[in-house]
Length: 236
Image (cartoon, rainbow, N blue to C red; front, side):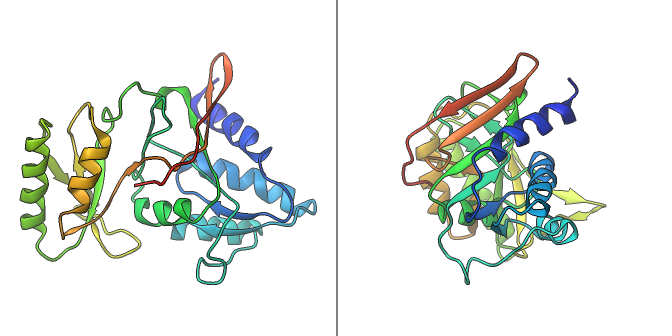
């Protein structure tokens, strides 16, 4: 199976967790888009759900395909979020934000009673950090924030550099109007310590480690679907 076929199979399995009447967080990225397409077919067939999108791109796709939407202000508590991930570890810790929607994704996931992650098997890692960690930062004081991140990373024994994410020759801007620094730290042995250290930096808006948020991970590979489960904790 090619990469898209694996994503479709993961999305199809995730759809089995959705019941009529649910309030859904609808994620971002290529795998989540496959889920939206399958969800739209169910909605067209009479399934009654309402969703909160995690990005403007997801919102546009939902509207195009007829998936009903609302906002977190109107519906602040959700039953389930289904989203993709850039990395998944055995404890269902995640790295997300490759598409730049990590802040909204984390807010929506935190508002949900459960979170199902859909990905292909290649995203599974023993320790987070192979994929660069996205860190969403305020425009003001960018260099000050960058240096502060490097200092806390050095204290935690994390080498590597930070790269300002660019698109079409200009700095990438998130839906929230912020910038993203991609951190090539490599293996992150203590994700909780790094999370707390990053949150203590004033210029850091949010980071892409989703810890204690995912309850289920659906991983599609050449040998079929693997489902991993975890106990919900307070996420960071």
